[in-house]
Image (cartoon, rainbow, N blue to C red; front, side, top):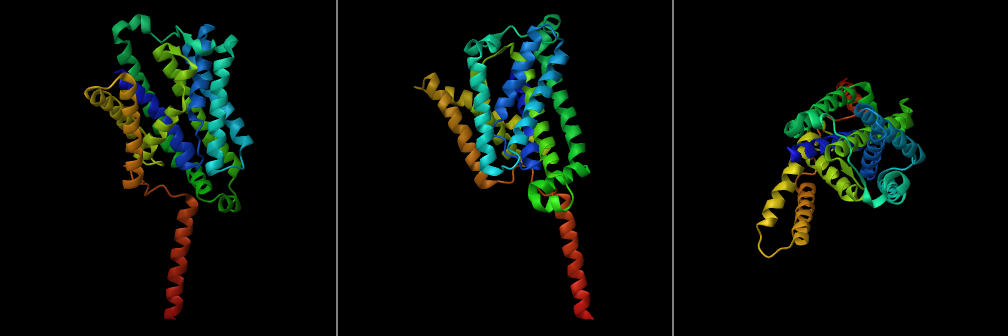
Length: 313
């Protein structure tokens, strides 16, 4: 049940990454920074006796607001440049969480974070949290599916495919970027809040770049534009992590550090194999065209038919 709940957290992060990266073309390597931001926001508000549902909403809102601010500052960056800036931003957040001991308790972390209904449910709490997390994943996936099938989704993919053409077509490129990045940051903050209340403990060492690599692997395995792929990829990733734990432990003569290294090696090999053998992911990206691409294809088809008629005439 613990592994299944963690897979639900990964699924939320992956859905946010699909929206920002797969649909919007915004490479956010600062994913883990927004996870930590949401976790600390919810933990601090919980310590101030705010209701848990308010803590979770606040975590999503704060993460979204910071994400919007960051996206606005780096609005002219794309590709590798955007990835480097967001990666540095995540490291800045982690250092702030480590050094601002008056607020975050530094490397000691925050413990005793209240979980919803934990005292009332007793041993049934892990099952309750598992069902609640995946129910939330289902709701988010459904809403994102409706959103990405709407004109907003087609316009967002148009920006991803070619910003200049999208701008010429009358689309607000900056607004679409901000919305996509904000949605991804909000889901990351929400996932961090859920994690904080589930484990009842957070510390800066929890929010490392390795988590971002995991989520990118998840989205890559499932197909970077597909919501279903994000969910299935999250389950596959956790299954791989747990399987590698038992397989590595069965190899004689290895200490705990070597076993952990082998598990990371398995993740790295998996990522390389996926990129080489199936770069489009398990769910092929066949129906993820932008409205502009579809319109352009239709125009080319019409022009082609007209040329044939002209030649015949």
